[in-house]
Length: 209
Ligand code: AMP
Image (cartoon, rainbow, N blue to C red):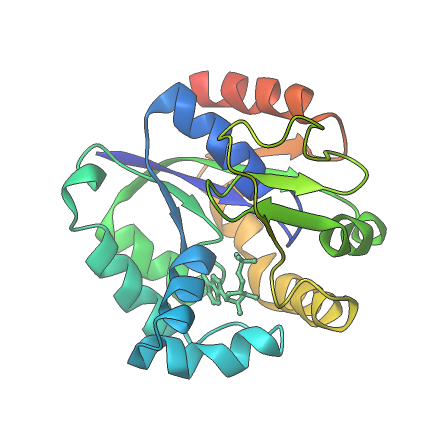
């Protein structure tokens, strides 16, 4: 079993690309952000603990995240590997992951900091199917979402103040992981500041190698 990691700052387009990679590879998307948002909504003990970190744009403690992943990876759909989106985000998370499953590719979607705020503050998703859109760069078609039941949803942490904290957490705690994965020879840098289709094309090419 071999998995893929989607790596990059908040707002790099990991969720959008995950949808496409999922269609091409068949690997299920495992987004720790989505799992935490579901836990917050359901008011589980994990959700109650995670909420304040998420609202402040800080990383949720490693012990919580690693436990979530250990449970998720046991589900039957993970048997041939998964596509991690937003995990790992710290060195201890990467160390834990290396004991849980093999990672064949780390796809780093790179977007300059100055583009991140606009990208995050304009984004929304379809509450019915989860597809992600953007006011300027990728608006929902006039005919509505392809699922046929568009309901606009915005994330509570997609605001200017929280974005800046999330970016600092990325630079301080997550970006050191690039070197860790580069040393393993599985790190692929992709320019994420382009059209969505061009990015997907390059990601799929990287996954073939
Ligand atoms: P995301 O949807 O990936 O942008 O994550 C939203 C928020 O969930 C982050 O700002 C963190 O507070 C938390 N989070 C998601 N994944 C992780 C992770 N792997 N480690 C720590 N915190 C996380």
